[in-house]
Length: 224
Image 1: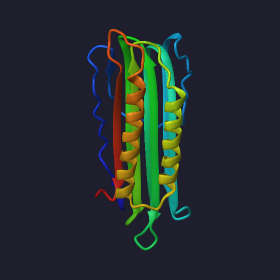
Image 2: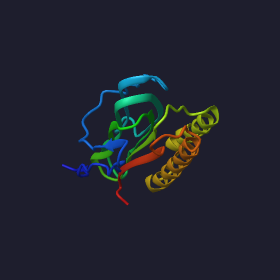
Image 3: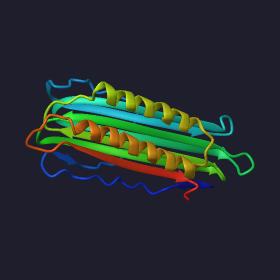
Image 4: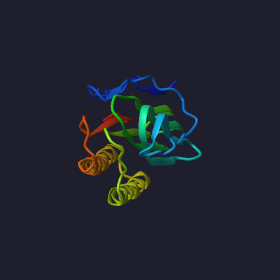
């Protein structure tokens, strides 16, 4: 049996001292994306967002590439759960008849409030089963924007994010090697981070400083 599975390791999360606590949890299967209701500026007790991208390549479909780019604006919350996952699987191919499976998921979550509890889970998982010579890449990027006062992304920021989304789509459909895909995906993530950082710089001030936190988890075969 030729099965490659990397050990499951939780992403390293940064715990914000007062306003936001980030706690990692083990990943489980997700049936689909559950959008959080946007209630920006309106009090609500809790919010949930679940986003997943899944790709499977096999001897029937040698190339499969999927990506998602979601923006969830929670508004003012007491507690929130944000889960982002990318899964890529390559099955039943060979060196002479190789497969290519790519899954990339970008999740942006904005939330307002002080002493808000956030449970953030972000995973990328790539698996090859009987798939020598296959390229399998899973990349999960999660951006958490936390502000003390109600905040929404302005039109300019949303247009910039939409442009990055279009370029992510083009990257996912490209034939670049997995190592180059990782580099390009990281570059797009850096652009998203800058757009969000510039946006929160204009957010209403409060007792706590607005923050942008990036969680990144990449997994892939070949491993180099």
